Length: 229
Image (cartoon, rainbow, N blue to C red):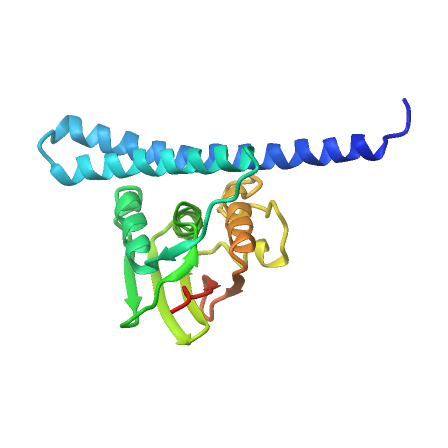
C-alpha cells in the first residue's frame, strides 16, 4: 500500500470531520424526536392538551433548524451570529424536555435581572443547553436537583451554570476531547452529547469549565460573549 499524499490526508481529515458532524446531528435529532414521540404518546391520551401540541411543534422546529444549520455548513457557509436571549432559550429547552425529566429530579432556575443578550447562533446554543441538561439528568439516576443559573458577572461575560447532584463525576469535555467518555452511570458510550457541547462552545469562542461540586455532583459553566450594545 502506497504512502498517503497530502491530498489523501486532507480528504481523510474531511471525512472524519463530516462523520463527527453527521453523528452529532443524528444524536440531537434523536433527542428532538424523543421529545416528539413522548408528546404524541401523551396526546393520544389527552388530545386536547394545547401545551403538548406546542411542545411537539417546537421539537419539530428545532429539528428543522438543526438540519438547516448542517446544510449551511455543507455548502461552506457559516451561520451568522445574532443577539440571543439566553434566558428565553433556556426556558424553551426546559419546556421541550420537561416530560423527559423524571419526577424525582427537581429543576431550579436562578436568573439575574437585566441579563443582556449573548452573541451566538440560537439553534447551536440550544444544542449546547439541551445536551448539558440531558447529561445532568442522566447522571442523577436516583433523583436530585438540576439547577440552572444565569448571571452576568461583568460587562464582558454572560454565564450559564448547569449543576447536578448526580454521580457522573467531572466530565472529560473540560480536557478539550472531541468525544468524551460517557458520564452516564451504567453506560459505556462515547459521550457524544458532551462532544457536541465542546464543539458548540469552541465555535462561539466560549469558555467551558467542568468541575466536581462539593458534596457530590458536577457543575458545567459556559461563559459567553454578550451582544455588543
